[in-house]
Image 1: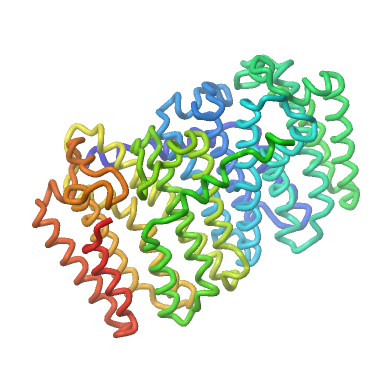
Image 2 (image 1 turned 180 degrees about the vertical axis):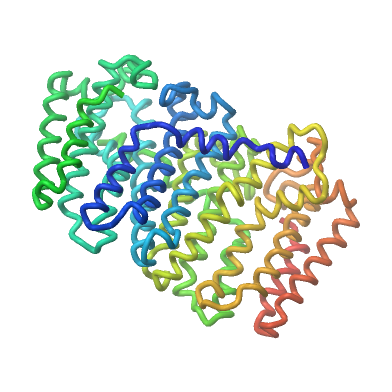
Length: 268
Length: 268
């Protein structure tokens, strides 16, 4: 039975899930805490969103997509193993996300079903996958994207899952999602602008992935459209907006405000 | 905004979901009906399992996996569009499956959460993805697989999702899953043996995909291990077993028995 156990998929899933900033898990845990939901329960949703995010990175790095060799300072999954393993590990990480999210430990069935539905919508053809598809289409488009188009693209590609993460708490508690939704929309966009700035200002070793790719490919980014200083000013304005949206939580939300400030000061 | 709407992912999802035998959807609807659950409710689970199945076919057909050009008589998604579109369409079909399954129309939250958990386990790294990974590993293994190993592989690759489909009814009704579980395990294995027989006896036009690939690749199959007549006898015995497992449902389950007989008489 030797060859039967010998599949690298689970190792690849573990490898792909290691490292990273854990921003989405942090948002889940903090938004849960603000609504009186402890980590013993919210940890399942936090693990789910990191599994989902890891799947998206593994597939985005594939040769037929962004064709990246380096991720979080290590070879990408298809470089460490092969393309088949990367496709399968990504596929299974997506399944794992929904498995973790629907476990009984996560909470009442109603909450679990609501969170599954929300995540599925955030990551599918109207959310994350749409964003990635638009990103790929933009590479071969005749004219560079406009600011409105890049904003729409990023709302799908990274924004939807960040919003899902930050609203886990009110969804589980049956509370108003509006403040955390406003926070996370501004945060998600600022996060992406910061990514574009890092692609220009960062070095590959610190960032943990290739930099300068966008400019090289002649791709429109927030930096190419707004200029470096304009992009920084826009990111700062969005962070201010995100912090103000947290007003209903008063000082209880200070950690989320710090996270927002971190997002635009980070080096990786 | 012209290039923004211009992504083929949704078209590719629709294309990949068309056609096929709809065996899994049929099993969902019949098992629901046996437990007094009507199609207006079970249709969501039936659509979900077909979306899930379509995703698995699109990814299995990729060049880095089975590298197939033909599926259900038409070019595979990566041949019709490109690899990036095939990866993304498969990814979004998996998300769509979980979205459909967790919709409020599907039933009580408890049922939805149970079905999501069951499907996620059936298709992840301990189920369908494991089966596909074992299948790929077998192609480069030093020795051909044994009968026990092929049986284990198929239990993951096709068996787990067929079992999930056939047990939707009792899961939703909170009833005993044992009879339909026994039925679907025998059915799933018989289905795969029939597939191996078709790969030898069928012609590509009727089957709708390439045939003779396994023998050409020197892959162990149920036919290579049991012989053609032995494989047919084994499939027949499994169908008898599947039909007997339905005894508790008496004549109410006659349609499921007919489906089992169809599985080994089909030409595609």
